[in-house]
Length: 251
Image (cartoon, rainbow, N blue to C red; front, side):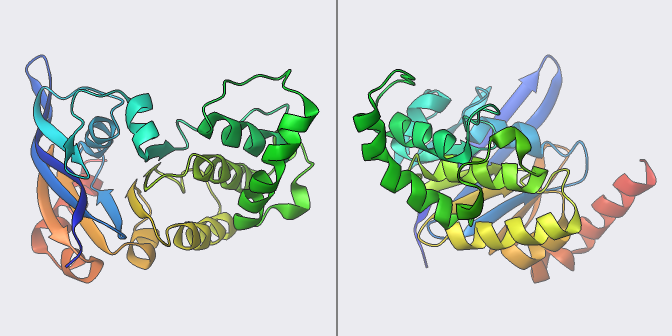
C-alpha cells in the first residue's frame, strides 16, 4: 500500500459557537487522486482551506511528507511542493499564454516578477515554458492573450502555471466549476494526464468526474467524515445516499 504523503489529524474549525469542521482526519496516499465531496454545507470547502493553509485550524494537525506544517502559510507550503491551483496561480489577462507560463517558471526559480528582465534571461526560461504549454495541449494558442481564451482553456492555462511550480501534491478547488460538458471532458483528461507521478487532492461537485477520475473519496457531512473508499463503495453507502437525498430535499 502506498504511503501517505499528506495527512490531517483531528482537524477542527470553529466560528464562534459553530463547528464548520469537526475532528476530521485524512490520509492522502502518494500517487493517488483523492476527492473531498459532500452536499452543500458539508464543510468540504472549509476543510480544503485548512489543508491548503488558506485558513488556520482551531485544533488538529497537518503533516506533509511526515513534517508538521500546521503553522506554515500557503506560500511556505507551496515552496515545499504542496500547491493549490485555480487560487494561487498567477494568470494575467493582458499577457499571452507563453508570457503567463514563463512568469510562473520565473517564480519557481526564485525570481520576483521582474517585467524588465533582459530578453536573454527570459529566452532562457522559454523552453521550459513551452514544454508546460505542450503538456496542457495549448501550443496552438501560445501567443494568444489570456483574455481571448475560452473559459475551459483559461483553466488549462491555470493548470500550466501550477505545473510550473513543480508540485508534488496538486490541490484543486472545484476544477470543473462553471464548465460545459465538452470542457469538463477535456479538463478531466488533462488532470488525469498531469497527475501521473503526482498526488492530487480535489474538491469537486460533479460526481461523474469523481467517479471517472478519483482513486479514493472522502464524503463529508455536517463537518464530519461520513464515509471513505472508492466510488463504488461510497456511492452504495446508505448514509451517503441519505445525506445527498436529504440535502436535495432541503434545497
